[in-house]
Structure formats: C-alpha cells, structure tokens
Image 1: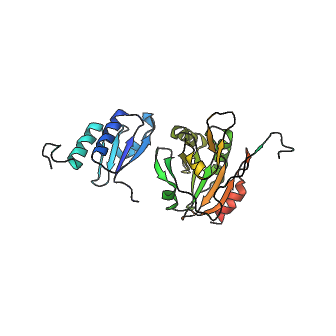
Image 2 (image 1 turned 90 degrees about the horizontal axis):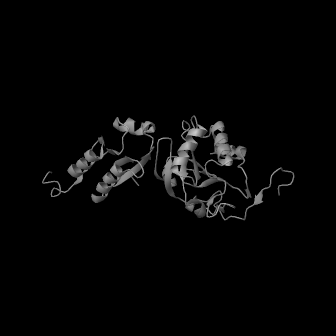
Image 3 (image 1 turned 180 degrees about the vertical axis):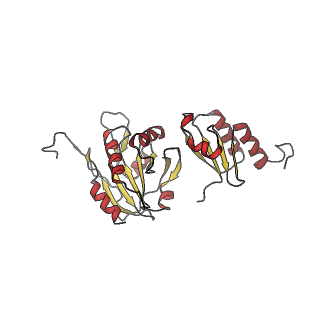
Length: 91
Length: 177
C-alpha cells in the first residue's frame, strides 16, 4: 500500500482542521492525518514543514505544495481538485 | 507461587497467544512519537525491518516506567541496529507523549501504539481484566520479537501478575536476529 500524497497536520477537535477534512472528503481525496500537540510551542514538526506552528497545515506531494491556514487550504483544494462548476469555471 | 517474596503474585490463566514461528497478527492503531501520531499498521513497520513489540501496563504504572528505563539503558535498536522498538498500552496518545518525554526515549525513536479499547491484546489472546478497576482491560505484559516477515522470533507472555520480561533473554534473541 502506497502512502497518500496529502498529509494533514491537525489537532484533535480543532474546527479549522475539521473544515479542511470536510473538503478532503468532499473531493474523495486520500490523505493521512498526523495529530500534533495542543501546546503551540511544542509543535516543532509543523514549524519544520510549514515555517509556522499553526494547524491545520497540509503537504501535497502530488504538487509539491505546503500550506497553512484553513481558508488557504480550502481554496487550494477547490482550485486543484474541485469541479470547474463548483469553482466558477476555473480550470 | 510467590513463597519467600515480600509481595503476592497472582497466577494468570493459560493464554493461547502466538508463539515463536507463528506470524504475528497484523493491526493498525495510532502510533505515537515525540512529535505527532498517525495510524500505522504493524506490517508497515516490519516492512522496514525487525520489530520488538512490547505490550505493557498503562502509562504511569511502575512496571511501564521500569521497562522503558531498562530498554533505554540497554540501548536496544540504537547505533547500527535496524531494530525498531515499539510499545503498546491502553493509554491515550497524549499519555504516550508524556511517557516519551519522561522516560527520555525521544532520541532513541522508541514509539508507542495507543489501543484504549484493548482490541490488539484480545487478538493476541493476552487481554487481562484489571481487578479493582471496573470495566478496564489491558494487555498482560508480553514481548514479541518479529522479523521483516512478521514471523515471531521470540515470544514471552507473563503468566503471573505482576511479572517482568527476562531482559537478558530478550537481548540474546535480538543479538541472534
């Protein structure tokens, strides 16, 4: 079994993370979840991949993209994996 | 029997657990390291090489503290060894992170599976209902040394409670890999 391209760094019960999860599920994307520390200062792994300690953070190896902030990630998923109809005709 | 000891031990019933030569049952659970946890299958780990799988009592109980201190001090899986050392208990990932910090096993890359519902121990037939803790079942202490095909090279399961692994015997089995 190959690893999924998308890795989501998330915090349990974080609504911004759940927003991203809903979008991943809506587009039926294969992803893996890595749960990190509630304590902001302990989230070194997130800092290392994204430059910031905020979650959600997402890595998409299919496109080489790493990003933070749920609104940015949702936009990215719409643009990259969404149907043209849903994204106002964007390819 | 515990004659001559200054504490009482309890005999545990016979268990039909996997033995050396058997292929260990596969399972998937959250695997915790010092930075995050993610779902991992035992077979994902053995695909990378041999695995020492240590079932232990819940985090915070003294046998768990002593066991990780001993494994750490013996340096299993360190240096040029390709052995991966993983624990498993019913404790949550949050408690496992505390254990990794407090036992100082972060640099050794020892990781712990979290199995609060004790299904893995049931699969291995080593589940143990705890006296005086209603509704709580955990694995009895057990050690399984697996090769890259998940075949058990060495197995030990406690038949008394409490009981500790014979660390010298485990180390000899590791050296024989």
